Every structure is written in C-alpha cells, then in structure tokens.
Length: 139
Image (cartoon, rainbow, N blue to C red; front, side, top):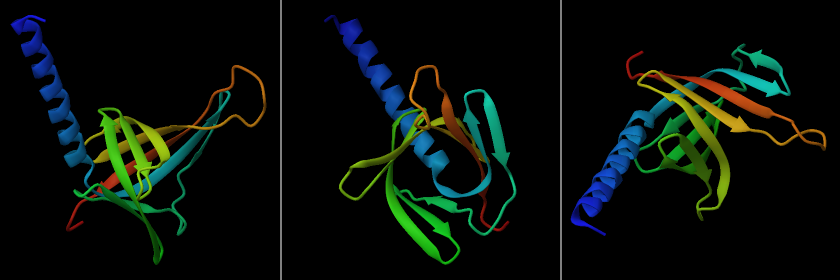
C-alpha cells in the first residue's frame, strides 16, 4: 500500500468517526414522539394523537437511553454504528432493536424500523416510521 493510499484511508476513517461523534451529540437530549406511521404492503396508517401512553426518549452522553412513560421508565444502551443507524442493546451488549435514521437535526428525529411480515410469502414490505421533536431546556 502506498503512502497516498494509507493517508486516504486514515482521512476517511477520521471523517467517519467525526461524523458519528457529531451524530451522537445531535442525538443527545430529550425527544418527544409526535407521530408513528405504519406501512404494510402499500397501505399506511398514521397515529398522531398524543396520549399518556406515548414515551419520551432521553439520550445521554454516556450511551444510555431512558424511555419514560408516565411515572415508569426503562433504560437501554444505544449505539450509532453508522451515520444512518441507531441500535438499542441491553446491559450485556445484546441487540434489542435497530432503526434506520432518516433524519436527525437539532429539532427533528425520524426513525424507520423494519417489521416482520404478518403472512408468509414474498414481496411484503412492512415498516414503522417514528417522528420525534426535541424538547429544548426552558421550553
């Protein structure tokens, strides 16, 4: 491998790491669920009626996410293995759930999760898209 190739690989690796660290900082904070859309083989349903059963999600700098619903809460570890993916794990590192990040900005988070088909057979497309708004301190 030439010096130029090594330099290029190093620059690309550092750029990827920096982007992931930036994404982690963008994700940190408290997010409120705005709506959840379910897509099943071309049909869709969107629930945007907030009720007491919807959770807020707090992503900490320590890699811990706390899901709060009423007075109850659950904690998970979270990771951003790539710029467009979010994974929840248990305390041992076992993967519990994974999402594709469709959008992550200072105010909005959109996550997509593939769902298992209800019926056997090919050509089924099932997924859920969750829309969140960041709750900024003082609002």
